Image (tube, rainbow, N blue to C red; front, side, top):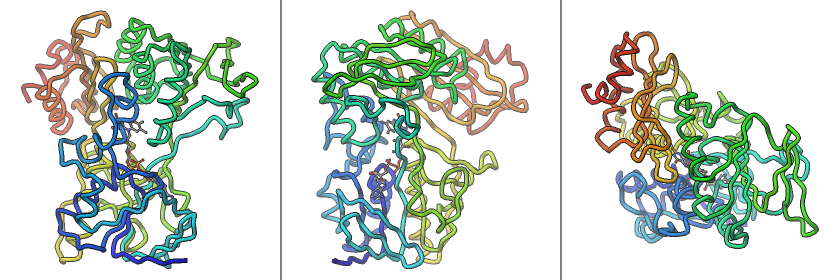
Length: 434
Ligand code: FAD
């Protein structure tokens, strides 16, 4: 079988890979030095679009519209861009074996790739109900969403089940965005999740109450405190019913499951140090193996701001970690140093006419401010998290670009706040003063 050799190889062709390629381009990579090997059939794109405009009946997003780096206001890297730069995009190619000691990767088709420096950017895979042996979970039209092929399947099923019934399993951000997108497609949507409120890892009960109320007003039904324990299918094998643990049975033409992901690190098991489920890196995304870097969802890295070691599954970090790793690689070659990664966590989501941003850490006490009435024509509200007398996290729904900048600054600066009643009263104006 053919063997190919590159100075730099990125394994994975998602968000991090795309932003890494752009940084390599800026740093003057030479033709033939860099290859991106991806299981997907398309050049790197902004993955968040898949649960948003990709599914809209109008104003639909399609490639090449959302190739990286448009999501952060940057240049759109079309397949031709890689060609011009002499960056080899090796698509529809899954790596099934990685030997870090021998600096060799092997694809499912048996091709061998050699590298000098490797960047691991394999991202996450969805957790499937079949992984837990949930009865009937392999029925047709029980779908997941991670890659563009999954989104295409979903679009096809939406078209085939006009006005049908959808059950969304999971109340995280994928569940919330998909419920909205499917409701906009005029489907009858029910969400099911076990927690007392949606997005419990980030939202407080107060924040969640707004979204649950807003979704209910849009006609999305929400069933909390129970889980799907089985599925019934018709004679074609298509899902027809979802059985809940509390005994209820829901009719369903489509089920979409969004119950989380897990970082794709199995290829490297036993070859590289791991922590918190990811590949352990330093502040330059260097792993325990020399010449091997890990970025994006798979990296567990030092978070300077909190003097902690964390893994972050969000697009902003995917972009920034990739840029940091490439800068570190290139400066290393020139015998220079760069600053350590100093990341301020940033998460966002959009659904219906809503849009929220969160910066910092959601620990300590939380206060809620603003107009969080789900029936309000222009809701705008937020939360601050306060720990050890300092504001460490800030959330805002419906903020303008300047207001979002202000809450980002609060989370970065961590101003003192002792009087929580006053903070609630001041609300957004507290952030705008910082
Ligand atoms: P990915 O972008 O997932 O890329 C990994 C790539 O590696 C994929 O192309 C995959 O096919 C490839 N790959 C994996 N294994 C192999 C292998 N063995 N061989 C070859 N290729 C391989 N974050 C937000 O902050 N806001 C959002 O609104 C938001 N929306 C999202 C919506 C959806 C539907 C999804 C799935 C995620 C969303 N995220 C969002 C999370 C964000 O997209 C991820 O954190 C980000 O994509 C991680 O980038 P990555 O490069 O690490 O991994």
